[in-house]
Structure formats: structure tokens, C-alpha cells
Image 1 (cartoon, rainbow, N blue to C red):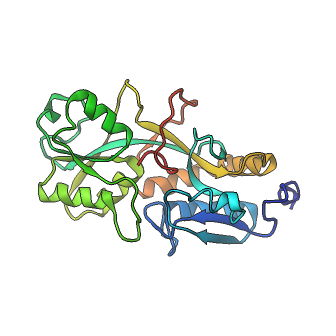
Image 2 (cartoon, rainbow, N blue to C red):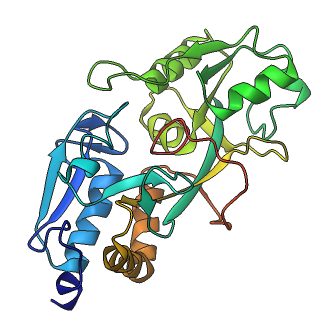
Length: 264
């Protein structure tokens, strides 16, 4: 096909090579149940190529040991403002959310400076942008912190936070939208997921794209064409997984990305 013939030499011409984590729902897993797995299937379908995965646990060194070692040609979810890799046009944007018990006194809060949070015990993932806001508001001292960097084969901080929320050990959890939205849907306790808003820095909304190596211009154009053609299908997948979608705005000035999937 014409697209394949114009790709740089490093990009496979006979298959779509995707690097992904084998255990990192809602993004991906080896059973191909994550929304990034479903989006990869859309890309493969559009390019008329068989889909091939190289699996590696997410964490430090993931990109260096996969994409940069020519073990794959694309990472389906990558924070768009990162300069470590090149990226396609963003295919979605999401935001941090406040997860609360449905119908509770904190239900529907959109701002962390809401007076109702003054005495609340909040769960938050360490080293993520909301931590800065909680510190500035004087809310961090009585917050409960959950680890950011873990091996998802053995630990799930977001699920731990929501378990604590259901048990009454915390009053609300602040989570990256795709994670909070997905696990809140799975919870046995009815939970509400409210997108958070702020005019302060760091921001809460981040744009997510396909990650690729620098200099692979034809490949980048091919991926952008897939996004343009199949955006509605991609949106439908994201919505079905509970991902709170935000408008895809122009690139912001400040950049803070503790994780390739966005700030988790």
C-alpha cells in the first residue's frame, strides 16, 4: 500500500508493531481488554496490517527499552507535550476527577478550593499535579497518598483508593480521569466521578496522542490520517470505558507528565 511504501526503514512494513503493558487496565493488558488495545485494533484495521504486540511492564525505561530499541513503532497512549518522543495529533484529552460516594456530601464538587473539602480526608496519587494544589490549599497534611510508580501486575493504587473510599477510610479520591472513570464503573459501591476544574498551574487537563520516534514524518502523517478518519470510533471506545473527555485545546505552556499515559 502507498502509506507503507513511504515509511522510514525502521517502521515495519508488514505489521503494526505496538508496545504496551501486559497488565495496566484500563489502558492495556495481555488479554487485549484495555481501551488502548481497542484503539490499536482500529489503527491496524485502517492500515490493513496485522497487529503485533511487544509486551513490557509500564514504568521507568519503558520507552527507552521498547520504542527506542526498535521493538515497536507506536505507543498508543502518550502525553502529547512530552519531548522524549515525537507524537501524533492528540486523539483525546482528559482531566483529573474527584471520585466520591454517590449522593454523599462531597458529590459534584468541581474545585479543590471548595469549602466542603476543608476537613475532608482525600486520597491522592503521589507526585501528580493535584498534590501541588492540595499543598497550596493546606489540604495535604491530612490527605492519604498512594504510590504513582508500581508494577501493575501486583498493585493497583487507584483501586486501593476506591476501596478505601467505599470503606469510609477516605472521603474522596483524586485520580487521573481515565483511571478514575474506569474503576469507578467497576466498583460495587455507587460512586460519582466529577471532572475537576482549575485556573491555576499545574493544570488538570492533558492531551494524549500516539508516541513514535522522532524523524518518522511519513509514519506520523499516516497515524494522523487514522485519527482524523476514525475519531468518532475512538471517542466511542473511550466513552464506553468511562473516560471523561475534555476539549482538545492547543498545546499549553506548562508541562508536567509523571507518566506516559498522562499524569496519573
